[in-house]
Structure formats: structure tokens, C-alpha cells
Length: 403
Image (cartoon, rainbow, N blue to C red):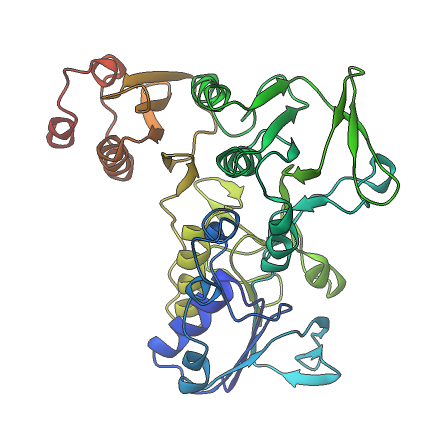
């Protein structure tokens, strides 16, 4: 393997090229990204960076000099328009780059409002890239009126930033409740209370009919007939895996670019990692959208590209920062049948423990780092304590690890 090309200069792509070099790969290594900036962190974009609390350079995953110093040919502002699988070349920037192995780390793209709803008006934003946040930043000011569309974690984080900046915020969720696809009603209730206490107008079971304005958004009409005067709209209705390049190359797509347990796609010379990739895990095919997975999966793929042949076995964890609350999530809650609620030391602390039957499968910990750490270790060890013991604040959680 003399030529490796990695498409996508996000968290996964950056981790993959660094791991290849760390594992001793000495051949040609090219990393291609569509954005102007070198690989950077996304989570602080909509928080510290947007609020002016983090300089641009601090977002970078590594100093820009790292890539040249490690023999990584970094192509920025460049889009791969095609993959020539027969001749093993990618077409980008008007040139054909040969590969012996190709890794697709193309990430995901945010869902946008259709033009018929007014989604093409200026002042309607998504939160995904540096350019998205730079475009939005001037509108984040005290007294401005914001509508957040979507009550998942992206939308709730956006609402928290806007309220912290002194804005008037309305959040609408078309489903019956916020966090409907990702968390239990107990966690939704907890965060609804948090946001309403901070002044966010949360309207559940409320869809958007259309945005109004001639060029720039000035208002919204909701499906229930309510009208809002607005200065900006933030759309947080989820993301979809960026599979267009893989599809055009004829690779198998199944909730993302389908890979085997090693990270190899339906073409043995092409691999995939990060938000764009789905993979088999414990009898199902899953796709994980998180920084942790992007790094871990990319590093596993790098090792497997070099011959490790080790199946990727993730230990999922996630986080969300809202106001002065840090939510930490361990495990995956799909298929849960009951939730044990453990009170915290204050009104801004609690943890929710998900069980599928008698088996502990996930934990949501709000300002409860000990609960999170214990829960994560229990899940990884395959241990399932009694839900009643979890819910009892007198229970010493650490003792459960030794049980």
C-alpha cells in the first residue's frame, strides 16, 4: 500500500491520517477537505466560539504545521467530484489522485427547511460548519428574537446559547415532546424544565407552516396559526450521512455508507468512518453521530487498513452542554423498557438509568459525573444493578461496581 487518500477533513479524517502515521505507515498520504480551515473541533463552534470565548486557532485539532511535518498532503477548499474505482483514482481539484486504499470520512449534512417554507431567506441558519457559525454570529445579540426549529439536542443547545446571549427564544418541536427520538420522557421533562426556567418558550406538538419576509426572515407562521416576529431562525432538525459521493461510485448504502465490522465498504479498497458510516454491531447495523465515535472508529479503520483485522467494538458515549449543565450519556438506550431516576445533589443534578428488562443499557447524567462514570463502567462490564437500588439516593454507586 503506497498511496492512501482520505476524503473528508473533519474529526474522523484527521484522526485516521494521524493514526496511520502513528502506526508506522510511511507511504503517500493525502487528506482532502472542502472547507478553507484545517481540521477543527465542531462542538465548541455553537458555544464558546460563537460567544467569542474561543479563538479560531484553538478550534484546530492540530497545528496546521502538523500535516506537513508528518508528510500528510493536506488539500483544503477542494471537493472530490468522483471516485474512479476501476483505476483507483479520485477526481478533485481538476486532477486525478491515485490510491491503493481510499477512506471516506465525509461526515454528515444538516437537514434544511425547504424553500417552500421560506428556508432560502437570509437569516435562516443551520449549525454545522465554521462558515455556518460565522454567518450567524452577528445576529446573536441581546434583545433579538430567535426561533429554533427542532427539539433535539442540536436545537436545545442553540436555544441555550441564544438565551445566554440575552435573546428572546421560541423553540418549536413538531413531535409531541422534545428529545422524542433520543431520550426518555424523564430526560425530556428535565430539560424542558431547565429551558423554561431560563425563559425559553417551548412549544411541543407544534410544526412550522412557513417563514415570512421578502429577502431576510422577519417572522414565522406556525401550523396552529400563531405568528411570531423574528430576527433569525436556527434549524436543528437533524443531520443525514453524506453519502452522495459513495452512491455515485456504486458503493452499498444502508443508513450511511455500509461497512463490515472492520470498516471496509462493499469495495475492498475503500473504507469509511465517522458520521457517514454504518456498521454491524451486536446483531444490528448502527451509525453513531459523535466525536468519540468519529475518533475511535477512524483509528480502528486506520489499524485495519494496515492489517490488524480487528472488528470495531464501540463503547458509545455522548455529551451536551446547555447553560451550566453538562449532560453525559453512556450506552445506547434503544429498546429500553424502564427508567430508574436517581436524584442529584441539587435541582440541577440527576441521572436517568435505562433498562431493557433487567439489563442496564444506558445512562443520562445531568451534572452528575460520578453517576456517569459508574454507569459507563457497569455497562461496559455487563453488570446490571437493581433499579430500585439505583433510585435510592442512599445507595453507594461505587459499591455496585464490586458487586
